[in-house]
Image (tube, rainbow, N blue to C red; front, side, top):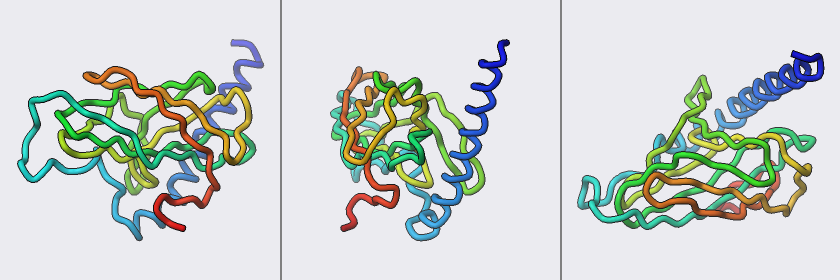
Length: 175
């Protein structure tokens, strides 16, 4: 491995460790105030169980808090489902080197291969819970920029969304 590759690898490990610490520190206060932020999403509808029809997905409340110095960023959004169960398998972006899905608990953050989208429910990616990690931005993000994210689902195919870069302290639904 060349010294440049070794340096890049060390930088990525340091950046990931920094993101874990930032998520733990930032997410801890949110967890105390708001609960866990939602395991694998919302609950099933009042009818209970999984629907046999196709998933009917929409994305809302998407945002990326402005990362420090254009580094690694977290991404948050809600996938609403008015139909049958689906599963988020992959997230990519033409403007970032990689986008990975993560699950946070009170003490850890782990990368996951997929996230369930319950029938007649929602998958919430929120501070302190499930979230995206966005790395290798082609251009350092600024407030107001929009990053295209391509969300690939097991049954519904790929949905592209434009996600705005917001202030680090932004919380959806709060003025």
